[in-house]
Image (cartoon, rainbow, N blue to C red):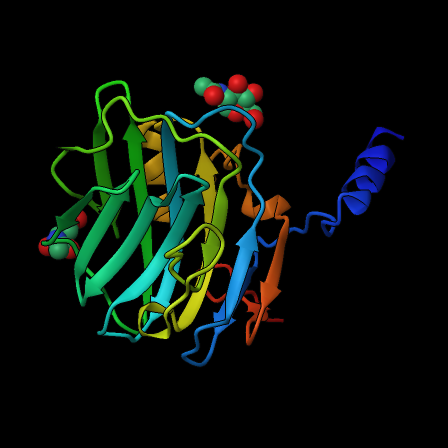
Length: 228
Ligand SMILES: *[C@@H]1O[C@H](CO)[C@@H](O)[C@H](O)[C@H]1NC(C)=O
Ligand SMILES: *[C@@H]1O[C@H](CO)[C@@H](O)[C@H](O)[C@H]1NC(C)=O
């Protein structure tokens, strides 16, 4: 009964019912300034700590957007892009930090986790099992307002302002978001493809989303492919 009420409430709010995406990917097959997935986060309070994990499969060597979270006051509120092959750029509430020396495999799955805690501003990026040094970005920052979270495009304005030269082309799976800096063991589990505690703000196994433009839902081939 409770589930039915939640389902009805979510239908009335205009959102599709959550779906289990655990063996699915979003595929962005062509470069465009429109193809995007809007993901709904279960975020009620201002955000003062975050962890985002995802896997992506791409062959781009130009700039590409990996994860774009905007708030009404700042489009680059929590943004991960790759400005050139192998360079990762983090933005928190505007300011940016570039991280090089981590891996980027084209036409293979890359597993990424990014942690941030505003109490000390410590932020760390993990890629394919290795991590960056710890940096300071977004100390004392609090992100308020309903977050607008987009995969496939980079938001230059809240919910829009897309530029196809920054778009993502390829596959994205296993994207989770937590309102805390998750433990090293949870990150290890995610990187290894073993069982981890799913995101409490976005859970890929219980995903509320809508798509726009040329985006397809396909079967995942990140280590879970079972053939009979
Ligand atoms: C990452 O870590 C592995 C060992 O776990 C190492 O072989 C590799 O050189 C490291 N660096 C990069 C950029 O992947
Ligand atoms: C994190 O999110 C959960 C669920 O939305 C909420 O209950 C909790 O209070 C949040 N914690 C913080 C520190 O905002």
